[in-house]
Length: 291
View (cartoon, rainbow, N blue to C red):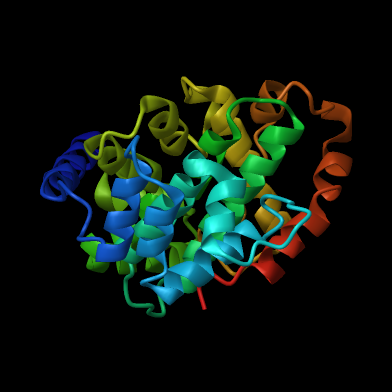
């Protein structure tokens, strides 16, 4: 009977998500910028002319370009230089991230602090990129996007299932349930599964969708390396107490994830993790996306 109840809740949740076919409308400047970044004929001058229409967008792009994420030796002070030094592919990732933030800009309430949520998302994404580079794992841009989007389902729940979100939070605080069990109990799906449903609808590749779905259980992922990387970084944010994002509290490090990241010595995991403490703190101090 319990499994039938969960299945019924899952079907109801999926029905609601079927109506979220598209991202909410993006700001015009971001939309124009993405169109130019996807064009094979656009020029740096055209890109710059569009981006500088929105000084908030300019500030955020330059903030990311000058963050430890890229470790550039020269300070990037203009958009045309940012385009030149980063390239279209990296700038596309940055603008995509900013568009997601704008599109899902919910009101903060006592159940979810939006600034803390997006800060956590950005830090996980940037740390995934850094570790991917250091461990020579795969395309670091994929690691950045997947890491950033890994908890998308949380803000989707907050926006489209708000009363259920409140119930889930109450179960965690008052009944001692962990978030994943509470999500499954109330919605029939976890935030990883909910985020993945929308990413698939928006035609994100499976190489990104699958790790988002299984970032808490990386052993089940078809892309175990990226799922394990996200899981490890999630754990590190809690260990270092970076930000104030409650959804990953009490997260336990999956030994299978460490085994999958073969370049990490399983006998010196704590030492490896500790070596990145300063990097996480620098990210938190330098990024100004969410002010």
